[in-house]
Length: 136
Image (cartoon, rainbow, N blue to C red; front, side, top):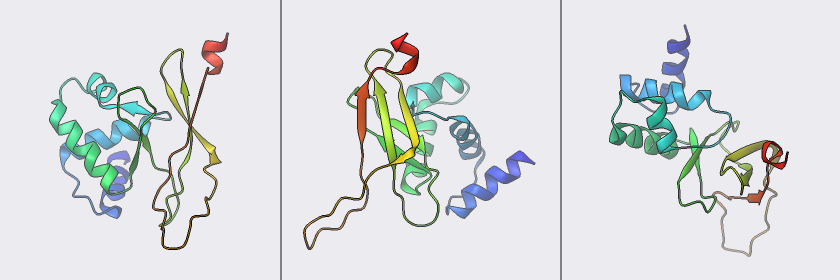
């Protein structure tokens, strides 16, 4: 069953699978582009904002989602599809016309060489412009 798969996925990431978390993760996992808390609220009108927010924060802390700051003023989230322990994020494209942020999973963020003593834990790479839908 699909729900069993969702439950196992949460447990693999060290998250207790409550009914709220299962429902929120089910919606998150449907997304192939970045989404906001407001997007999730619209998809799940039966659930209160604070429950959704707490689930998103938990998923982020357990590396199931990563956060994107694309400069729009809204925190966006993207499903982490990284393999293994290393979470090398991908490039995101933010459209100045429609405001959508797209995950360009096939384009990895380049490894940056840092001075001795610095340890990279994550990186964000935002490209801004006009998406194909808006380019017309």
